[in-house]
Length: 263
Image (tube, rainbow, N blue to C red; front, side, top):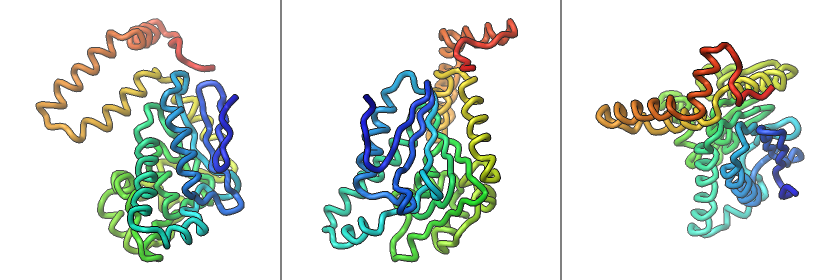
């Protein structure tokens, strides 16, 4: 039996896992319990060899409204050491989602505020409903988007990060698309249809090729030419000779679907 959580929910449909924030009464705000449960879940998903895509979303009208106010009341009185411990746990969770071997699709069904935008930023592809709202609102309460910062800056670039980290300005879905925070946006009643299309597209690609593509994207920007040239050449040579590469090329040449396609 699948593990039951208090603040999140997992629904598995074959190779697709849908992970939902399950605190709709407080707009899916996160606390220490959610951080622990989400970390536990994504560690198990990382080891799931049948998994090919994860959809991350929120129950109700919001995606994730940032930190839970009741948790913040406790955090305000924590020692520096306790604050550091919980901040490191959140940082570890973002990195865990960001480095998951399989694609993570963000189904941004509503507001993503403060730390909630961090969960948007660690998704490989973020797809927003037209009604979704976004804000890096931390400066409004005297703090900064620290743990989410590395991922947001990668997504939107330093210039836009300077603008919106400093202003805390609220963004519509169209604005979030314009600055690169989300990859696509659709009318609310089309969101699920478009997510389903995207999942199907990913499932039509080689599972190991997808894993290696994520690795390539992560590693190459950190390399010098004398490093990335042999690295990339070796990667493509290995993939061409792999079982999956052989199957994929044979299927293409013979005008048939490869054996990993899920109908």
